[in-house]
Every structure is written in structure tokens, then in C-alpha cells.
Image (tube, rainbow, N blue to C red; front, side, top):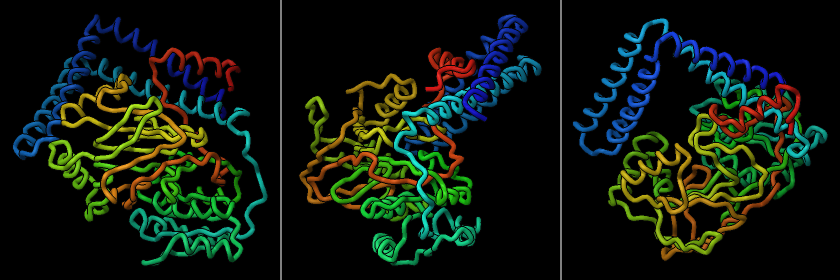
Length: 447
């Protein structure tokens, strides 16, 4: 369905939600507002108890907060039952309609944006690669490549497949493939593997293909690929080409981001791969309690403000939007030619909780526990000879001083013809969004 079809669907859903809301309010004789208030307070209480359960070091406090959260949820369900089954069903239907509107509006805006001349400029449809090469990590995603039959499917398309073996040098393998005549390089693995081979693709000026078989595959998500269907991503070997930006720190290229500080310590922990949540819990709480020292670095923002110690420094290839696409962070563009710098300076659990609430409400400001800006380059210095870092989720060591740079449109990426586009998260109460979707529905506003 095109942009106009999705926009019409969104507006119909919105009209049904508004009509249903009016009917529900009138029929309940005002009790609806009491239920909404109770639900809002319940969400606040559950969020607070969940945060305290996460940050406390005492098991009995963790269990107490978890039990309190369960009681609040049970009480809310009881209120809904007392409110009346029909009205409760109406509330659920309104919620479903609201989500339907948001999803359809997002697709309408995305399709319209990606079909605009400004977005497709520079893209092309060159001849399909004659000798495509694909590196497959059989252990990525718990053996996902084998479960879906990726190797056989790729070979059936004429793609030369190399199965990664323990001790293999990804960069050397990719360079040998190019020297042997490969005219497209692909990777089926995690984000760290993608970045290494993509660097060779930039170096050799050949197209790159991403096949999402890793655990998270943030790059695939931001590119618009369906991470649940790796076989569909093989269509990219015969698909159109896009040019996107890449980031560089020192001599190492990255597709997503580079982290310094607490998160870098998380990915460097030996048990991180097996127990991600437990490791993150221990390291981050240790930092917030002062058991781990803050990152001692020196860097400046575009206004000349100097930073000397932070909890986390994150430098991303293009802008991340918190909460986009149901993820902790997502990018709607990969070709804006900027780095996004985020410096987290909150030093206590309470400060971090307050900052998280302000970010969720989109009220975070420079100086309120964090700072964020975009730039084309960032120089970082430190008193230590080495700094642990996470590059696209892989633990590495950087040697200060080093510089972050963006290489605009440096990577040629092949994508499937039917690529699900991404756009900024839709907010139902945003009148600008409603007007924009309405304009698409009546046949205008396609740019």
C-alpha cells in the first residue's frame, strides 16, 4: 500500500478513536476520567517500583518493590472490572485504535519521505553483482543462519559463501575476496562483524550487503530490513543501491556508534555475551554508586564548553531518536553527514531516573545531567594510555588522543527493492503530524 493508502487508514482509525472516546465518556457519565487517572497513577507507581527494584542492592527490597508493582496492576484490573465489562472493552478498543493510527501514520510518513526526490537522489540501479561474496557467521544469533537455511539459499542465488571459522580474520578474508574478483561484499552476522567488512567495501569501493542474523542487528533495523526474515535480505544482491555515511574513530570504522565509559565496561566484561542483563546491572549500578570511577576524558562541544568526566560518552553515526521503533534508540536517516555526541553526566540513581523521565517527556535540556549535539568531528583526550570502548557492540581498546570523523555517503549499500522504510516516531497528540497525514490522505504533501 502506498503513502496515500496508509494515510487514509490512519485518518479513518483516528476518526473512529475520537468517536469512540466521545461515546465512552458520555456513556460512563464521567467515570471514564477517574479510570484514566487511576491508570496514569498506576503506571507511575509501577515505573517507580521497577526502578527501585533495579537499583537496590538488597534482595528483600527488590522483592518488596516487585510485589508492590504486581499489587498495583491487580488493583487496576479490579478497577476496570468495576468500571464495567463493556466500558473496559471500549478502553481496550480505543487503545488498539490509537496504536493502529500511530502505525498507519508512521508508514504513511515513511513511504512519502522515501518516495520523495530528495531522499532517492544519488540512489541507482546498477547491474547486479556478477561475483557477490557473503561471509556467514554460523554462531551469530544462536545459529540463526543454519536454522533458516541461509547458506543454501545464498548459494542458490549464485552468491559465493564463506563460513566463518574460529580465528578467522574478517578484514583479511574480505580483502582476499575482493582481490579474487568479488564485486559485492556481504555479511550475515552481528553489528561488529558488519563494520569490519563494510570498511573493506569502502576501501575497495564495492557495494555492501547486510544480512541480519545477529542477536540485535541495530544497523539492519535502521536500514529498514526485516530482522525476522534474513532470507528476504538476500534480495539486496539484486536490489538498488543507496549511499550512506560511516563513522571513523582513529583508523577503525563504525556503522552504529562508539561508547566510552560505563557501557564500554559492560561489553568488555567476560560474561557479557552469556549474561547481558546481569552484567549490565552489575556494572551500571556500580558506576552509579561510585564503586567505579567516572570516565576521565577531555573534549569540547561546538560552543567551546569543556567536559572532563562523564558516566557515558556515546558518539553515533547520524542521529538516534530515543524510543523510535520500539527500541532504545533508532535512526531515521543514515545520510545526514553528522555525528551525534551524547555525554551522560548524571552521577546518582536518582539523577539518572530524573533524566530518564525528562527524556521520555522530551524535556531534557543541555546541562540537565547530559549534553547532546551533532558535529562532523570530535577530538577526545585522556590522561590514561588506553581507554576501553565498545564499537558497534564489540569491546576494543582506544589509545588517546583520538578523533571521531564522519565520512559522508562513503558506503555503497545494496538493499531489497521492497524495503520497509523508517521514519520518526509518530505522536498521536501532535497536531502537525495529524495535519501532515491528512494532507497525504487527500493527495498532497508527498514531500
